[in-house]
Length: 166
Length: 187
Image 1 (cartoon, chains in turn green, brown):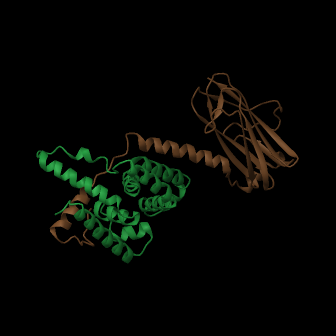
Image 2: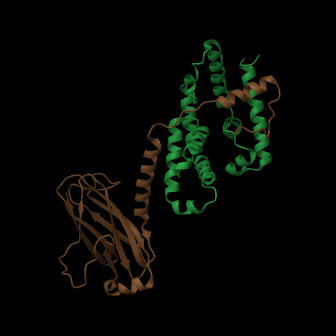
Image 3: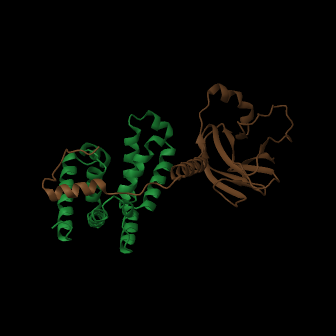
């Protein structure tokens, strides 16, 4: 399983949006997969299989994760709390502008529904292809496309209303 | 890895959103998290495995070789220890030597000539020896079922003091019972 850990961690972070929840999800996946190690050897694409199992675990526990996320957002938590680490290029003014925009993007993403936020992050941030999202989420490619389109439109709307883009 | 199979970000504003999304950061896993998660998964997997019993299939030839031991319903032995000869005195107790604070898995085998439902297994531990996953508990009881043949029960034991003692595993079904004793020496 180890060769897939980085990929699984990224998926866990994108699904849950927070490190503590990502650790829980990752751990639950490993426990579930540990009992199926023999089966895993026979699977053609174990990485994709593990991702699907993780996604299904997330869906099963979605209410729990959503409740936690709501709680942390109420406390003013930004899921992308690694944002500060992005500063440090040679142009501090430009860095700060970029950092501000990323924070606004972060807040805008939290206003999307789970299904929209996950699809836009997987496709536009993680580089998943439509077909990969279709296989992961077990929804038709056409549905992936329409959700991605709506998610992007909503994101644009929020960011424009918030003044991120004039 | 970014793809353009649905690139609806057409104008400058949309391109900027896409660029931001590509840079949208996330936290890395903490140092050592993967190893810890694997260790916990292995531990939890073993515990769940123990709770539901691992039914092992052994060939009929091996089962036939055990037929004398199966008289009376069920029998218990430890496959990772030398099996006692039939002529060995009953008082001879199998034993293992453990290293202090080093977990060791001892496999107990319960052989039954028929499938048994609603059997009760009670493991009693001496002071200073714990079962992984059950800290501080001296006696642990499971309700379980046995398949026909040999049923493997791995017990991960940890010696916390150098005292040692005897582990008792008592299997009960209806009005029958068997108690297995395992001597623990700690080095």
